[in-house]
Image 1 (cartoon, rainbow, N blue to C red):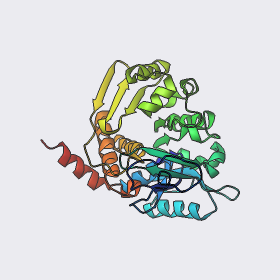
Image 2: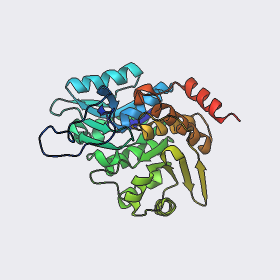
Image 3: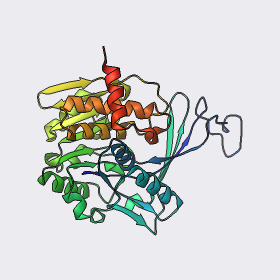
Length: 319
């Protein structure tokens, strides 16, 4: 069973305009009022929920460990996940906290501004994860490292350690680089029990203090990481291991929204790796799943089935 620990929230997506507005006080003006051609989208969001949703779409048995409030948004999140077949044994509904939400404002050139309320996620702790869920994990992904304060460091470390000791594949995504971003020093205790450390270029730079991707990855390897995978958007992803480096190109597609791309990549990567694909093959499959999500027009909700992803990859890779 795949076990995902991470955020679950609602994304409110505002789009359909040419460029970001200029803030000019509290009045409606020609520069501060923007008319949108696109309708407001109410979508499933959060690193954990996104990844779990995509994995379930690929046919995996997946359990999500996260939290929402006992409110309307929480019911929407649960409905999305339940209808997709995600197991919610480690999912908590807090009566005293609201469901987290992110309002995402994105113009036609894909500049993005986001407003986030953490809600119930701020109180989710290691003790909320049923021991039976970790016992049955064959793959464990810890994500949302920087924005789940009760799990940060020791909670995530304990979950990764438990899964690793029983032979599960373990992965840690250090993003997002917001609030108090992840720093390399706090990762060191967990690195011996992490098979794959996942990051993007910006998160890697903030974490290590290195603006160069190669130097940043080298710092993590020197600190004890077994394998660092750097997601690079449309350029694909690069694998770094001791003494070797391999770049896997992405798939060119028409991009509707990049929201959830990294989570979709994680899902595809871990799904393929669990099925016995080589690491490079698994990264390529992750790139394919991410490409289908960002080109779907529905974000994560437009994630592919396993058959669709395989067929897309077959056609795209054909000479």
